[in-house]
Length: 481
Image 1 (cartoon, one colour):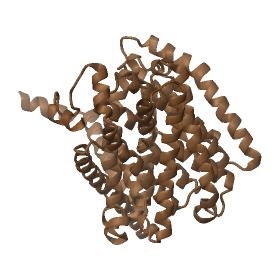
Image 2 (cartoon, helix red, strand yellow):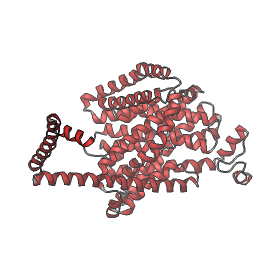
Image 3 (cartoon, one colour):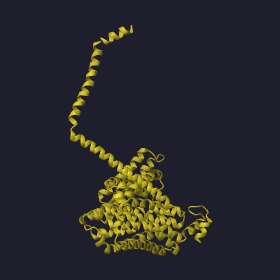
């Protein structure tokens, strides 16, 4: 019965037509593809496609290798330097220099950090720095700025203005020797002043945490001074970059644009962000809310770049106008921090290592100049802070500790120096000198604090006698006496 039914259906003209039509559709598809294939497979096109694919895969591999190498080396060195009370950034920066051409030599370094991947590493590095500056902006605590606001403003601006002027004076002998020929003295002097004025707010905060100083009166003042100083220094950098990137006739408009941008962010952008935070209160992890924050971050960076100032200034400013104590700041910061500092910033350290040519300082006179730069940078920061702190009522010991803390530079200095090198304001030789200055001044902070016996003073103020590495360590405290 079933056989008869199947035979009857198979004789149905409609079913036969469907089967034939389906077969023709498949056949026509195959024939059409073969025709397209015969037309498209020319030797030139095939070779180009294969070459492009191979090149893309090769570049991707060449980017992954230096990233992995710099992350591993940086983490190892960071752990080693932590044992001698140095911030992790020292080890990470040195990792880039160690893998660069200065110590390994051009040929051996090219195996790990080939010059061909520099543009690709540069894109990753720029993204990492933009996100990092956004995080730094999120860390700004307006409450700290209001505590002893009068003294904080005076000390922070003194710690900016004194080294700024000394940097401008230092530019006089350095300009004819170490500046690029197409850079005006005004741009060079402005940049040297800013580079001498930087204090690394995140590194300073890390040092204060390691020394259990964040809750002390002096620690709070140091954080407040660093916060105000960072804002001032980045405004000065914006002016310096604007002058360097614009023609003289356009420089005025760049400065005006930067001021309008800052005013817009504070008077219009901040209320909008506060409204968004209230709108998503209770759900700061919403994908829509986070997407809006990141869109705002990109728009701020694009706007700053379009005005003629660096994109990192826009990212920093956006982070600064987000309320420090809001749920949004508390959610976004830890989510970004690990990815940025562990994965993206190593590209920046690798790029800095490739650019830092210590071998360019082969002449003894260059090392003398490098030593002079370190001396001027240290005296300017320490001296300006010390005198201002004394004039506002602090004792000699506290003033010396503040001056030592404000001399911390670290990653923020490297960001400024890379901006100057990208804009060709400074030469590769001066770049190497300034990188060494940033490392030297940052590495000096912890040993000088120990020499000042600051650790004992601060913990006694809080009623705690605990070593930063070992709680209640009478042996260590005995060594401090």
